[in-house]
Length: 425
Image 1 (spheres, rainbow, N blue to C red):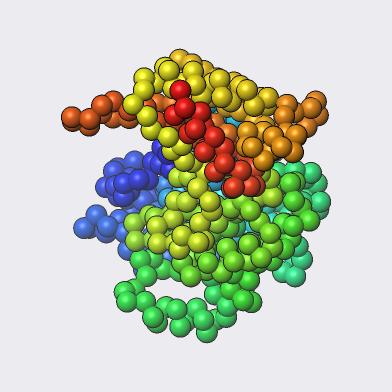
Image 2: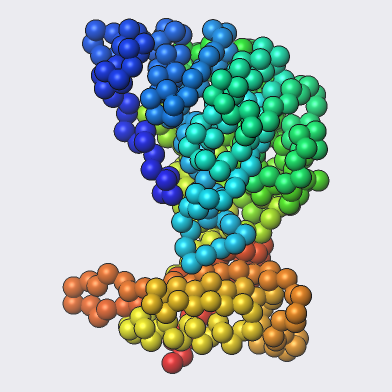
Protein backbone atom coordinates (compact mmCIF):
# COMPACT_ATOMS: atom_id res chain seq x y z
CA UNK A 1 0.00 0.00 0.00
CA UNK A 2 2.16 2.83 -1.28
CA UNK A 3 0.01 5.77 -0.16
CA UNK A 4 0.03 4.95 3.52
CA UNK A 5 2.31 3.13 5.93
CA UNK A 6 1.09 -0.38 6.72
CA UNK A 7 1.94 -0.84 10.39
CA UNK A 8 1.48 -4.61 10.04
CA UNK A 9 3.87 -5.12 7.13
CA UNK A 10 5.94 -7.22 9.53
CA UNK A 11 4.41 -9.91 11.74
CA UNK A 12 3.01 -8.75 15.07
CA UNK A 13 5.57 -9.04 17.86
CA UNK A 14 3.59 -10.95 20.48
CA UNK A 15 6.19 -10.45 23.21
CA UNK A 16 6.13 -6.71 22.69
CA UNK A 17 2.33 -6.65 22.67
CA UNK A 18 2.26 -8.67 25.90
CA UNK A 19 4.54 -6.13 27.56
CA UNK A 20 2.07 -3.39 26.61
CA UNK A 21 -1.22 -5.17 27.36
CA UNK A 22 -1.80 -7.26 30.49
CA UNK A 23 -4.88 -9.04 29.12
CA UNK A 24 -2.93 -10.23 26.10
CA UNK A 25 -0.05 -11.34 28.34
CA UNK A 26 -2.49 -13.61 30.18
CA UNK A 27 -3.32 -15.63 27.04
CA UNK A 28 0.21 -15.81 25.60
CA UNK A 29 1.70 -19.33 25.70
CA UNK A 30 5.04 -19.96 27.48
CA UNK A 31 6.76 -20.20 24.08
CA UNK A 32 5.65 -16.67 23.23
CA UNK A 33 2.99 -17.75 20.72
CA UNK A 34 -0.79 -17.43 20.50
CA UNK A 35 -3.01 -20.52 20.52
CA UNK A 36 -4.95 -19.82 17.33
CA UNK A 37 -7.16 -22.85 17.94
CA UNK A 38 -8.57 -21.16 21.05
CA UNK A 39 -11.40 -18.66 20.29
CA UNK A 40 -10.74 -16.60 23.43
CA UNK A 41 -7.07 -16.18 22.52
CA UNK A 42 -7.92 -15.14 18.98
CA UNK A 43 -10.46 -12.61 20.27
CA UNK A 44 -7.97 -11.20 22.75
CA UNK A 45 -5.35 -10.69 20.03
CA UNK A 46 -7.86 -8.65 18.01
CA UNK A 47 -8.98 -6.66 21.06
CA UNK A 48 -5.41 -5.92 22.14
CA UNK A 49 -4.30 -4.77 18.69
CA UNK A 50 -7.32 -2.47 18.38
CA UNK A 51 -6.69 -1.07 21.85
CA UNK A 52 -2.94 -0.50 21.40
CA UNK A 53 -2.81 0.68 17.79
CA UNK A 54 -6.14 2.48 17.38
CA UNK A 55 -7.42 3.27 20.87
CA UNK A 56 -10.53 1.16 20.26
CA UNK A 57 -12.58 -1.02 22.60
CA UNK A 58 -14.24 -4.14 21.17
CA UNK A 59 -16.87 -6.53 22.51
CA UNK A 60 -17.67 -9.70 20.59
CA UNK A 61 -20.02 -12.64 21.12
CA UNK A 62 -18.35 -16.08 21.07
CA UNK A 63 -20.44 -17.27 18.13
CA UNK A 64 -19.59 -14.62 15.52
CA UNK A 65 -16.57 -13.93 13.36
CA UNK A 66 -13.53 -12.42 15.02
CA UNK A 67 -11.83 -10.20 12.42
CA UNK A 68 -8.08 -10.22 11.84
CA UNK A 69 -7.05 -6.58 12.23
CA UNK A 70 -4.10 -6.54 9.74
CA UNK A 71 -6.17 -8.03 6.91
CA UNK A 72 -9.01 -5.55 7.45
CA UNK A 73 -6.62 -2.62 7.54
CA UNK A 74 -5.06 -3.78 4.26
CA UNK A 75 -8.46 -3.60 2.56
CA UNK A 76 -8.97 -0.03 3.79
CA UNK A 77 -5.50 0.98 2.64
CA UNK A 78 -6.24 -0.39 -0.83
CA UNK A 79 -9.48 1.62 -0.93
CA UNK A 80 -7.54 4.70 0.12
CA UNK A 81 -5.12 4.15 -2.78
CA UNK A 82 -8.07 3.63 -5.12
CA UNK A 83 -9.65 6.94 -4.09
CA UNK A 84 -6.39 8.89 -4.00
CA UNK A 85 -5.36 7.89 -7.52
CA UNK A 86 -8.75 8.45 -9.13
CA UNK A 87 -9.83 11.74 -7.62
CA UNK A 88 -12.18 14.06 -9.57
CA UNK A 89 -9.87 16.96 -8.67
CA UNK A 90 -6.47 15.65 -9.79
CA UNK A 91 -3.29 17.47 -8.84
CA UNK A 92 0.23 17.07 -10.13
CA UNK A 93 0.62 13.87 -8.10
CA UNK A 94 -1.41 11.15 -6.36
CA UNK A 95 -0.62 12.05 -2.76
CA UNK A 96 -3.14 11.36 -0.02
CA UNK A 97 -5.16 14.36 1.13
CA UNK A 98 -5.97 13.75 4.84
CA UNK A 99 -8.48 16.62 4.85
CA UNK A 100 -10.71 15.19 2.10
CA UNK A 101 -14.13 14.07 3.44
CA UNK A 102 -14.94 10.46 2.51
CA UNK A 103 -18.12 8.40 3.02
CA UNK A 104 -18.12 4.60 2.75
CA UNK A 105 -20.80 1.91 2.96
CA UNK A 106 -19.93 -1.34 4.75
CA UNK A 107 -22.23 -4.10 3.48
CA UNK A 108 -22.54 -6.73 6.22
CA UNK A 109 -20.60 -5.00 8.98
CA UNK A 110 -20.78 -7.95 11.39
CA UNK A 111 -20.75 -7.91 15.17
CA UNK A 112 -17.38 -6.18 15.30
CA UNK A 113 -18.20 -3.32 12.91
CA UNK A 114 -14.48 -3.58 12.26
CA UNK A 115 -14.31 -1.48 9.09
CA UNK A 116 -16.05 1.63 10.43
CA UNK A 117 -14.08 1.34 13.68
CA UNK A 118 -10.74 1.07 11.87
CA UNK A 119 -11.67 3.55 9.16
CA UNK A 120 -12.83 6.28 11.54
CA UNK A 121 -9.79 5.79 13.78
CA UNK A 122 -7.27 5.75 10.93
CA UNK A 123 -8.88 8.50 8.83
CA UNK A 124 -10.26 11.46 10.85
CA UNK A 125 -12.37 12.76 7.92
CA UNK A 126 -13.99 9.44 6.97
CA UNK A 127 -17.57 8.53 7.81
CA UNK A 128 -19.46 5.26 7.36
CA UNK A 129 -22.86 3.76 6.81
CA UNK A 130 -23.25 0.08 7.78
CA UNK A 131 -25.77 -2.65 7.17
CA UNK A 132 -26.31 -6.15 8.52
CA UNK A 133 -29.12 -8.68 8.31
CA UNK A 134 -28.35 -10.57 11.53
CA UNK A 135 -30.05 -9.07 14.63
CA UNK A 136 -27.46 -10.56 17.01
CA UNK A 137 -24.53 -9.11 15.06
CA UNK A 138 -26.38 -5.82 14.66
CA UNK A 139 -26.78 -5.45 18.44
CA UNK A 140 -23.04 -5.86 19.02
CA UNK A 141 -22.16 -3.61 16.09
CA UNK A 142 -24.23 -0.81 17.60
CA UNK A 143 -22.60 -1.36 20.99
CA UNK A 144 -19.09 -1.22 19.51
CA UNK A 145 -19.84 1.96 17.59
CA UNK A 146 -21.46 3.62 20.62
CA UNK A 147 -18.78 2.72 23.17
CA UNK A 148 -16.10 4.15 20.87
CA UNK A 149 -18.00 7.46 20.58
CA UNK A 150 -18.50 7.07 16.84
CA UNK A 151 -22.30 7.37 16.63
CA UNK A 152 -21.94 10.79 15.01
CA UNK A 153 -19.75 9.34 12.22
CA UNK A 154 -21.33 5.91 11.66
CA UNK A 155 -24.91 5.27 10.55
CA UNK A 156 -26.40 1.78 11.06
CA UNK A 157 -29.26 0.08 9.22
CA UNK A 158 -30.59 -3.43 9.80
CA UNK A 159 -31.61 -4.95 6.47
CA UNK A 160 -33.41 -8.07 5.25
CA UNK A 161 -31.59 -10.99 3.57
CA UNK A 162 -33.64 -10.58 0.39
CA UNK A 163 -33.55 -6.77 0.49
CA UNK A 164 -31.17 -4.44 -1.38
CA UNK A 165 -27.46 -4.71 -0.58
CA UNK A 166 -26.84 -1.04 -1.34
CA UNK A 167 -29.78 0.84 0.26
CA UNK A 168 -28.50 4.38 -0.20
CA UNK A 169 -31.98 5.90 -0.15
CA UNK A 170 -32.95 4.08 3.06
CA UNK A 171 -29.74 5.39 4.62
CA UNK A 172 -30.51 8.92 3.49
CA UNK A 173 -27.39 9.11 1.34
CA UNK A 174 -27.30 10.87 -2.02
CA UNK A 175 -23.72 10.09 -3.00
CA UNK A 176 -20.87 8.15 -1.38
CA UNK A 177 -17.24 7.46 -2.18
CA UNK A 178 -17.07 3.69 -1.86
CA UNK A 179 -18.69 0.45 -0.80
CA UNK A 180 -16.87 -2.46 0.80
CA UNK A 181 -17.89 -5.96 1.77
CA UNK A 182 -16.54 -9.36 2.80
CA UNK A 183 -19.25 -11.59 1.34
CA UNK A 184 -19.75 -15.13 2.62
CA UNK A 185 -17.40 -17.48 0.76
CA UNK A 186 -19.47 -20.63 0.55
CA UNK A 187 -22.58 -21.73 -1.33
CA UNK A 188 -23.82 -24.12 1.38
CA UNK A 189 -22.75 -25.72 4.69
CA UNK A 190 -21.63 -28.77 2.68
CA UNK A 191 -19.45 -26.52 0.52
CA UNK A 192 -17.82 -25.09 3.66
CA UNK A 193 -17.03 -28.57 5.02
CA UNK A 194 -15.73 -29.78 1.66
CA UNK A 195 -13.47 -26.74 1.34
CA UNK A 196 -11.95 -27.36 4.76
CA UNK A 197 -11.31 -31.02 3.97
CA UNK A 198 -9.41 -30.11 0.78
CA UNK A 199 -6.88 -27.88 2.57
CA UNK A 200 -3.38 -29.34 2.70
CA UNK A 201 -2.82 -27.93 6.19
CA UNK A 202 -5.11 -26.88 9.04
CA UNK A 203 -6.39 -23.30 9.15
CA UNK A 204 -4.11 -20.78 10.83
CA UNK A 205 -6.91 -19.63 13.12
CA UNK A 206 -10.14 -21.00 14.56
CA UNK A 207 -13.32 -19.85 12.81
CA UNK A 208 -16.26 -18.88 15.01
CA UNK A 209 -18.44 -17.51 12.22
CA UNK A 210 -22.18 -18.10 12.15
CA UNK A 211 -23.77 -19.64 9.02
CA UNK A 212 -25.10 -16.20 7.99
CA UNK A 213 -21.49 -14.94 7.91
CA UNK A 214 -20.03 -17.92 6.04
CA UNK A 215 -22.71 -19.17 3.64
CA UNK A 216 -24.88 -17.51 1.00
CA UNK A 217 -26.76 -18.99 -2.00
CA UNK A 218 -24.37 -19.06 -4.94
CA UNK A 219 -21.38 -18.10 -2.78
CA UNK A 220 -19.35 -14.92 -2.99
CA UNK A 221 -19.63 -14.57 -6.77
CA UNK A 222 -23.43 -14.59 -6.63
CA UNK A 223 -23.33 -12.04 -3.81
CA UNK A 224 -21.08 -9.70 -5.80
CA UNK A 225 -23.22 -10.24 -8.91
CA UNK A 226 -26.15 -8.84 -6.90
CA UNK A 227 -24.02 -5.82 -6.03
CA UNK A 228 -23.07 -5.32 -9.68
CA UNK A 229 -26.73 -5.42 -10.71
CA UNK A 230 -27.65 -2.90 -8.01
CA UNK A 231 -24.73 -0.66 -8.97
CA UNK A 232 -26.14 -0.05 -12.46
CA UNK A 233 -29.06 2.21 -11.45
CA UNK A 234 -26.94 3.85 -8.75
CA UNK A 235 -24.35 4.76 -11.39
CA UNK A 236 -22.30 7.81 -10.45
CA UNK A 237 -23.86 8.14 -7.01
CA UNK A 238 -21.00 5.86 -5.86
CA UNK A 239 -17.42 6.56 -6.94
CA UNK A 240 -16.17 2.99 -6.36
CA UNK A 241 -17.98 -0.23 -5.60
CA UNK A 242 -15.60 -2.80 -4.07
CA UNK A 243 -15.71 -6.35 -2.72
CA UNK A 244 -13.17 -8.67 -1.15
CA UNK A 245 -12.99 -12.22 -2.48
CA UNK A 246 -11.71 -15.29 -0.69
CA UNK A 247 -11.07 -17.45 -3.76
CA UNK A 248 -8.77 -16.65 -6.67
CA UNK A 249 -11.15 -18.40 -9.05
CA UNK A 250 -13.90 -15.95 -8.11
CA UNK A 251 -11.97 -13.03 -9.61
CA UNK A 252 -12.43 -14.11 -13.24
CA UNK A 253 -16.13 -14.83 -12.64
CA UNK A 254 -16.69 -11.36 -11.20
CA UNK A 255 -14.70 -9.62 -13.96
CA UNK A 256 -16.69 -11.50 -16.60
CA UNK A 257 -19.89 -10.25 -14.98
CA UNK A 258 -18.56 -6.68 -14.94
CA UNK A 259 -17.67 -6.79 -18.62
CA UNK A 260 -21.07 -8.25 -19.55
CA UNK A 261 -22.77 -5.41 -17.67
CA UNK A 262 -20.75 -2.82 -19.58
CA UNK A 263 -18.25 -1.74 -16.90
CA UNK A 264 -15.16 -0.17 -18.51
CA UNK A 265 -13.36 1.00 -15.39
CA UNK A 266 -12.35 -1.61 -12.82
CA UNK A 267 -9.46 -2.53 -10.53
CA UNK A 268 -8.07 -5.77 -9.11
CA UNK A 269 -5.82 -5.94 -6.06
CA UNK A 270 -4.24 -8.57 -3.86
CA UNK A 271 -4.05 -8.48 -0.06
CA UNK A 272 -1.40 -10.68 1.54
CA UNK A 273 -0.95 -10.99 5.29
CA UNK A 274 1.19 -13.89 6.47
CA UNK A 275 -0.34 -17.11 5.11
CA UNK A 276 -3.63 -15.38 4.29
CA UNK A 277 -4.28 -14.11 0.78
CA UNK A 278 -7.39 -12.30 -0.40
CA UNK A 279 -8.34 -10.48 -3.60
CA UNK A 280 -10.21 -7.20 -3.98
CA UNK A 281 -12.19 -6.03 -6.99
CA UNK A 282 -13.47 -2.52 -7.55
CA UNK A 283 -15.59 -1.07 -10.34
CA UNK A 284 -16.86 2.37 -11.20
CA UNK A 285 -19.37 3.97 -13.53
CA UNK A 286 -17.30 7.15 -13.28
CA UNK A 287 -14.42 7.65 -15.72
CA UNK A 288 -11.65 8.49 -13.24
CA UNK A 289 -8.96 5.83 -13.57
CA UNK A 290 -6.73 4.62 -10.72
CA UNK A 291 -2.98 4.10 -10.90
CA UNK A 292 -1.56 0.89 -12.37
CA UNK A 293 -0.16 -0.27 -9.02
CA UNK A 294 -3.69 -0.15 -7.59
CA UNK A 295 -5.75 -1.40 -10.53
CA UNK A 296 -3.37 -4.14 -11.68
CA UNK A 297 -1.80 -5.14 -8.37
CA UNK A 298 -2.85 -8.80 -8.25
CA UNK A 299 -0.25 -11.49 -8.95
CA UNK A 300 -1.61 -14.63 -10.58
CA UNK A 301 -4.73 -13.00 -12.02
CA UNK A 302 -5.09 -13.56 -15.77
CA UNK A 303 -4.06 -10.60 -17.90
CA UNK A 304 -7.49 -10.48 -19.55
CA UNK A 305 -9.09 -9.93 -16.16
CA UNK A 306 -6.96 -6.86 -15.45
CA UNK A 307 -7.99 -3.41 -16.72
CA UNK A 308 -6.17 -1.64 -19.54
CA UNK A 309 -2.93 -0.12 -18.14
CA UNK A 310 -3.44 3.53 -17.22
CA UNK A 311 0.23 4.43 -17.64
CA UNK A 312 2.59 4.21 -20.61
CA UNK A 313 6.08 5.36 -21.56
CA UNK A 314 5.29 7.38 -24.67
CA UNK A 315 8.88 7.95 -25.75
CA UNK A 316 12.53 7.86 -24.69
CA UNK A 317 14.97 10.25 -26.34
CA UNK A 318 18.59 11.33 -25.96
CA UNK A 319 17.59 14.93 -25.26
CA UNK A 320 17.83 17.02 -22.11
CA UNK A 321 14.73 16.87 -19.93
CA UNK A 322 14.24 20.64 -20.05
CA UNK A 323 14.04 20.63 -23.86
CA UNK A 324 11.73 17.62 -23.88
CA UNK A 325 9.50 19.40 -21.36
CA UNK A 326 9.20 22.44 -23.61
CA UNK A 327 8.24 20.23 -26.56
CA UNK A 328 5.56 18.48 -24.50
CA UNK A 329 4.24 21.80 -23.17
CA UNK A 330 3.97 23.28 -26.67
CA UNK A 331 2.32 20.15 -28.09
CA UNK A 332 -0.37 19.87 -25.41
CA UNK A 333 -1.00 23.61 -25.12
CA UNK A 334 -1.85 23.62 -28.82
CA UNK A 335 -4.69 21.11 -28.38
CA UNK A 336 -7.03 23.70 -26.94
CA UNK A 337 -8.19 21.94 -23.80
CA UNK A 338 -7.16 22.65 -20.21
CA UNK A 339 -3.45 22.33 -19.44
CA UNK A 340 -1.26 23.12 -16.43
CA UNK A 341 2.48 22.57 -16.79
CA UNK A 342 5.07 22.71 -13.99
CA UNK A 343 8.40 23.17 -15.78
CA UNK A 344 10.46 22.83 -12.60
CA UNK A 345 8.82 19.55 -11.63
CA UNK A 346 8.57 18.23 -15.18
CA UNK A 347 4.91 17.30 -14.76
CA UNK A 348 1.62 18.55 -16.20
CA UNK A 349 -2.12 17.80 -15.99
CA UNK A 350 -4.49 18.30 -18.89
CA UNK A 351 -7.99 17.64 -20.23
CA UNK A 352 -9.52 17.68 -23.69
CA UNK A 353 -13.08 17.06 -24.82
CA UNK A 354 -12.13 14.91 -27.80
CA UNK A 355 -9.38 13.90 -30.19
CA UNK A 356 -8.06 17.14 -31.74
CA UNK A 357 -4.67 15.88 -32.84
CA UNK A 358 -5.16 13.14 -35.43
CA UNK A 359 -5.63 13.75 -39.15
CA UNK A 360 -9.01 12.05 -39.02
CA UNK A 361 -10.15 14.38 -36.22
CA UNK A 362 -9.00 17.46 -38.13
CA UNK A 363 -10.85 16.33 -41.25
CA UNK A 364 -13.99 16.10 -39.12
CA UNK A 365 -13.46 19.64 -37.93
CA UNK A 366 -12.04 18.90 -34.49
CA UNK A 367 -10.47 21.96 -32.95
CA UNK A 368 -10.70 24.13 -29.90
CA UNK A 369 -13.32 23.04 -27.39
CA UNK A 370 -16.32 25.26 -27.08
CA UNK A 371 -17.41 26.65 -23.73
CA UNK A 372 -19.39 24.01 -21.83
CA UNK A 373 -17.82 20.96 -23.53
CA UNK A 374 -17.14 18.12 -21.10
CA UNK A 375 -13.45 17.38 -20.61
CA UNK A 376 -13.86 13.68 -21.42
CA UNK A 377 -10.18 12.69 -21.61
CA UNK A 378 -7.78 13.54 -18.79
CA UNK A 379 -4.07 12.86 -18.49
CA UNK A 380 -0.94 13.60 -16.49
CA UNK A 381 2.45 13.77 -18.21
CA UNK A 382 5.81 13.25 -16.53
CA UNK A 383 9.11 14.23 -18.14
CA UNK A 384 12.03 12.70 -16.26
CA UNK A 385 15.56 11.48 -16.70
CA UNK A 386 16.27 7.78 -17.04
CA UNK A 387 19.01 6.37 -14.75
CA UNK A 388 22.13 6.42 -16.92
CA UNK A 389 23.67 3.10 -17.92
CA UNK A 390 27.40 2.71 -18.40
CA UNK A 391 28.65 3.59 -21.90
CA UNK A 392 25.19 4.80 -22.95
CA UNK A 393 24.06 8.41 -23.46
CA UNK A 394 21.67 9.95 -20.93
CA UNK A 395 18.00 9.58 -21.88
CA UNK A 396 14.79 11.39 -21.00
CA UNK A 397 11.46 9.57 -20.93
CA UNK A 398 7.94 10.90 -21.25
CA UNK A 399 5.35 8.96 -19.25
CA UNK A 400 1.63 9.50 -19.83
CA UNK A 401 -0.78 8.68 -17.03
CA UNK A 402 -4.40 8.20 -18.10
CA UNK A 403 -6.61 10.01 -15.55
CA UNK A 404 -10.08 10.15 -17.06
CA UNK A 405 -12.03 8.52 -19.88
CA UNK A 406 -13.31 5.16 -21.12
CA UNK A 407 -11.61 4.97 -24.52
CA UNK A 408 -8.27 3.10 -24.41
CA UNK A 409 -7.79 3.71 -28.15
CA UNK A 410 -7.90 7.46 -27.50
CA UNK A 411 -5.28 7.06 -24.77
CA UNK A 412 -2.98 5.13 -27.09
CA UNK A 413 -3.52 7.68 -29.86
CA UNK A 414 -2.61 10.50 -27.47
CA UNK A 415 0.59 8.70 -26.45
CA UNK A 416 1.45 8.30 -30.14
CA UNK A 417 0.94 12.02 -30.75
CA UNK A 418 3.25 12.91 -27.84
CA UNK A 419 5.89 10.56 -29.22
CA UNK A 420 5.74 12.15 -32.66
CA UNK A 421 5.89 15.71 -31.29
CA UNK A 422 8.88 14.96 -29.07
CA UNK A 423 10.83 13.09 -31.74
CA UNK A 424 10.03 15.52 -34.58
CA UNK A 425 12.10 18.41 -33.19
